[in-house]
Length: 547
Ligand code: GLC
Ligand code: CA
Image (cartoon, rainbow, N blue to C red; front, side, top):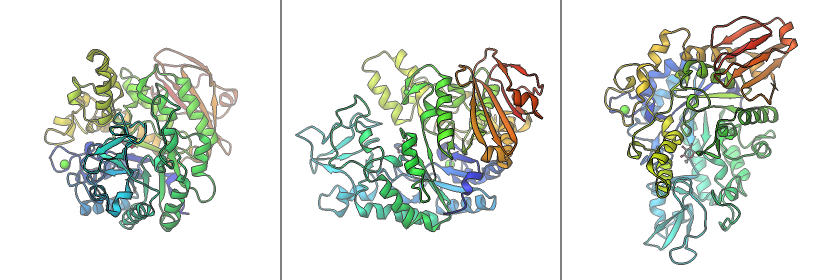
């Protein structure tokens, strides 16, 4: 096992298409990334997770790979990738790649060859006969289409796709497929990358016989292939045969995983995964997905944070990524943009674990509302729209999509108040949020009190703070509907984090030991450093006390 360096770093996620356009064609690329590495260093970042950079038809923006060993031409090539890796390493920034092996693109040569019934590649995928003419092999749902099966006329058989019809599920039970995965891992590790974020990795082992799911009305099938029968075996195989030979780490995307299951993935001295992204805290304003919205419920958020903080030794901490709307627009307030942005930053960056900051989060980028479904790109949004519009008027359907779509996180990063937010010199591939003139990196660079500089200070603090790294976690006033309060303690040092999730005043009495300790305000979003024993909070106020 390596040195667990991933525990001492803050990661930054780059979704390459919208990060920075270095060659002026309107699409983000690795040339843009290369130029921004110093910026990331100045933010205190110690690692980058790249959403897929591989060659892909981009029907799900890189999560549909057609060549695992090539960089998408619009993002660059292996030369510039290597330069990015070398420069990042020179700056002591680690590089983590996305590993998408639940499925490939239907344009991957394996799948193209597998269309021939006699090809050895046929068994790389799940090709099956229909139950009867016109009826797919089972009743599973797809996340991005309605049914999880695509039909091929030539062979009169169906192939499984849990995501869109151009994202074809690989048959991981085939040892040849696992060998391919191991070869891909080696290829990138030998190129110098430091780890992988493993896409929907908990779903790669499907149940034998692919049975119907008669238990649930939606997400049919998911309970059968989530943490499927051979998942631990396969992850151990990747670990033992490849990963163990490198000083690297793996973080798994793990939707719907319970604490008990999480421990099965991460327990023992030879864990399948070093860390995982759980989703529970992303459901404080929805059920399962943002397409089933509910009013924001702070207690739900607190329960999720506290449960994972208490029951797991180490968590991946995040509030945003490319799959979720922007956090200020969800759990914070666009009216109290700066205040709520800072509160949310402190709220999660001082928890125990490895934090991930998503591009644009550090300046508080917000959701966008586009006028028509034709303006959207996200295949999940389009599926939901097409289903809903059969039953409801557009005035009802569109606002729901606008709030829920992953496209909210995918608008170009707002670097400056120049045209197109300084992202590109030409019309970008996707809409730039109009608020770029006020919310952008350049203007926040100049303001010592900006959200960006607040992130900088918090990251610098947590990187050297033993309390944040090793301290215990305890939640205070768990029943309070507006305040999230927790303490961290380590070797006689303490931190008390008080976060208000409302614009209404709330009172909070500091605990006795804090009042009586040698106390100081470390962070505040109103520049308040008074030490009154009773705090009456301002809108979305955060205070971090050291005692
Ligand atoms: C993961 C990715 C998401 C993608 C899906 C299918 O959830 O984060 O963006 O659409 O897997 O690969
Ligand atoms: Ca470009």
